[in-house]
Image 1 (cartoon, rainbow, N blue to C red):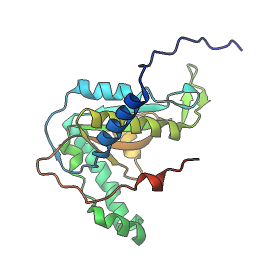
Image 2: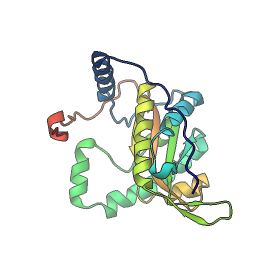
Image 3: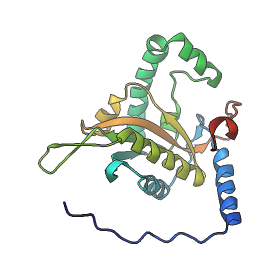
Image 4: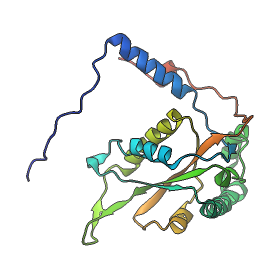
Length: 222
């Protein structure tokens, strides 16, 4: 097999340890202000902002560089309304029939329910899909390696990019999400991963008073 072609690594800035620490601390502080938002203003967000954030997500590492992520950004009010209707139908089933009591107890402090009004108020919904398998030019299936992990990394980078751009987000995962394939016309080899709500928090927006675990509880050093 012919070896892959290589190119020079893009240059990285030459920084002192102090400068690296300053950058890392600033980025950590910026992301520590990220909160999940469920109350949105209808304030428009430029498509160009969304495009740049999606480019950032598309730079994520992936298994065998297969890049199995697919993003569908929706601002059309009629399509957002259909997505809300599909999501709320599944959420009603979840809250009324599927969810065990323990799960409902865990959700209670967050105040969530089957009403998902943010889905048609926020200016953008980004449906994230992963490829279960690829298709070559002849229509034959091609295995995808680590698609869940790859798309999870890309989604995290997307959330960070949107936060850096001054926007609020919410990860929404109604289950099942097959209605997204139907509404958005996605092929059967793509599976919905999550629905990302994007926009500006409403004036006076309140969020639950939660705390993040300290570093010593989430990281170990040897």
